[in-house]
Image (cartoon, rainbow, N blue to C red; front, side, top):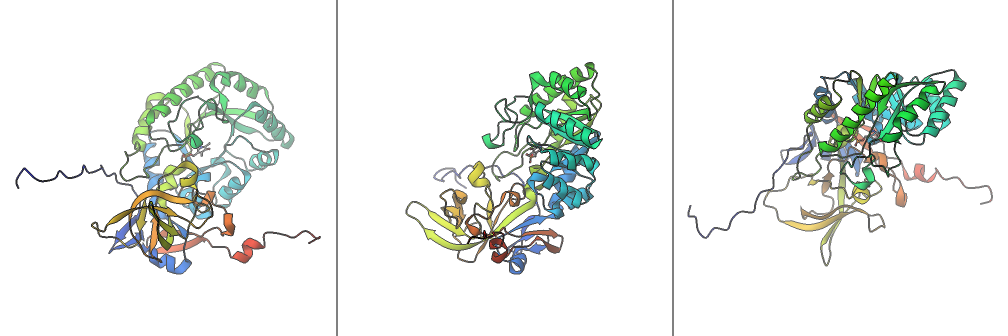
Length: 439
Ligand SMILES: *Cc1c(COP(=O)(O)O)cnc(C)c1O
């Protein structure tokens, strides 16, 4: 071929492999071995669909990376709290990190033993503490001194002892979205690093409490290992200082937060093996049980949101794909400016022309979008799409705004699928309201 005249090809963007079991087979998107259209015919759209093989793979990759440490993975239930998801992970040996009595009950109901459950969160109530104490949980992750006092009172009144770790705020910048950054001094979480020794001394003086660990969690969707390294080095300093002060620190809880790939063309977040190397080089020699609280990493890419195109609207500045799912079903694009890859369920030719469009839902809010300025092929009414990486902070954050019922959740395993949360009827939704006797 001649050198001259030819236009240089556009630089190809590096593609990363996002590991999941949602793939095209014979031109149709499948979840493992089940065609998405089969599920759509059975349950209607929209719906969430989770892949068991992907859930298990992500748990196992993380667990294998940490095999060199004495450790327990406590899945952060707030990322996805469906009973079937909890049970799938529980069967692999996972513990749970919960932030409310509701989540604690979900974990226990799915068969996770209390001794594998950590309770985090800045606003635990006395009732929640009492329930957790009676459930014999592994650890209360304490976020303030007033909370210490209330837990001490609650435990003493029940004649029980609470194992505690104090969440320390290391004041590091996790370099993530402001709404999911938790380890800066201005965030509401944890006690300041400089106060930690004093707060631990206070804790040790209170009845009903047994200091057993340290805890940190600096944020979510973290894709750079440096903030972890800086925070772990501070934890190392703290554990040594606490032991010198006579505290028995047997548990080091390093939180969650490791990011996942959302965009095909973005740089891949660090592999769990590299995260484990950082741990080895910072706190690895401290001789303790390490607790990890991953949420997104385990379920994020194990779920998709399937939706149907209602109308294709050609706008003046750009086009709109109006679909039957909305911000009330998946709020991440609206709340965190999150990017979710979108795939047509029917595989398109690579040569199919693409157009710039917004993918939007029916909710009456300008902020109601699933994707903005996205290049996608033009689809027709009733065509189905999959919104990928929707398995974490998806269904759990949904609501019924615009009187749209919560959408069903489906789990696939090999050639089988099951509805793991059915779609409520409109009657059920409306009948939650009760009229006062004067109307
Ligand atoms: C949200 C949360 C997690 C999980 O964060 P991911 O980014 O999903 O891994 C872990 N621990 C605590 C205390 C949390 O609040």
